[in-house]
Image (cartoon, rainbow, N blue to C red; front, side):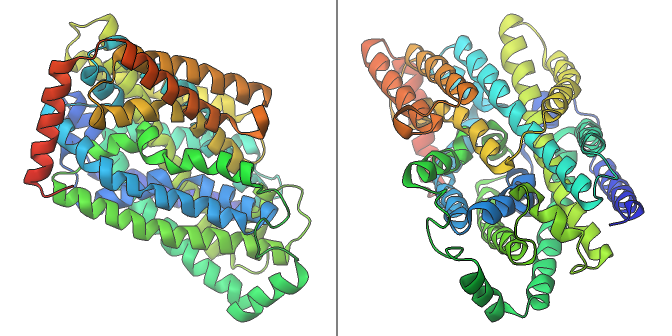
Length: 491
């Protein structure tokens, strides 16, 4: 594709999204809740689109399509597990919202520290999130880099693509915090779902229609429509990849933090329903996209090239291809923005707040705004490693956050949980996952996420039973949650 088409698309996206971000401003943000949570007044429709854009990033049309290209039908089951895992939000979403409203939590790590009466736990959870989420943010930048480089046959470099995405993410986040990101997310989500769906229909028609599409896959690509396909998705591999996705909605703080933002329980329900519909459609689109590349361009060097090569082909009109490119870039920028906001709020609220308890909300907000570009820069530097297989790297980053799952579940369902148990489980299991990922170790053939979750659960339960729980806080916390859920008729 000619380079000038790419620049036109990026320029148009920048102008439209920039105006949207500017118009989202509602006065000067004076505190952490206003800047990082949209003052807890986000509507259901905007929340649903923002939650969708945050979750479905460059991973989908680059990563999942690439995984489908490389490893066939198993990729669909892998992603559908995530949608099944979203049912956890039906359980935990109302609980996060209720306690966030009651205690004024800004971050999920602040919630953990308060519930278990430990500032050290808040700090540990925040730093653990930074360690595993910065590489995940880098994955989004890499997705944009691979996209523009592949579409232009190298005329626009990988580095240029990642740099543009980094700058846009910083600008959109700084303009008005979460309110800015939520509005631009909504715009981006609409571009993502509409453009991708329309282009998939165009591609299928070009390949002879839906019947011919699947007939070709069955006849010319043996095993493409069966599991385990080419053998990549063995049972242990499937479990290792899907387990982080199953708990993604409560283990990843950039996602769970959004559960504090809806205006009411009604808007929270609308957010979750809208996300489920969006996610199902986008999953099918990404998988079909990958299969289309299998038919049209077999033998690519890596699956991550499937989308860029397909977009730059003669199947898709240049203007339509540019719109899809903008949708993918928008998805990546949205996810990076959410990660930047979450991590900067954690550093300011939990880490700096622990070191300087007397620090005012206004000063915490200043620290958070300063940290935003620092996190973006770290993600940019990590992205320059140009690691292949975006889908697998995304899951690897999320595997480390699985260690947070047992203490999070214990927050709402186990009075005997203790700070010592939570701290030990997060530190020990987190270090184990980090070492396993760094060395490529698969103990007994199982992925790092499985071992991280198992070790975290055993340590959290075992050590909590051997130490003293904060009974008064646990009783107050759980009783308030129960009474509010009953009031809102939530199980």
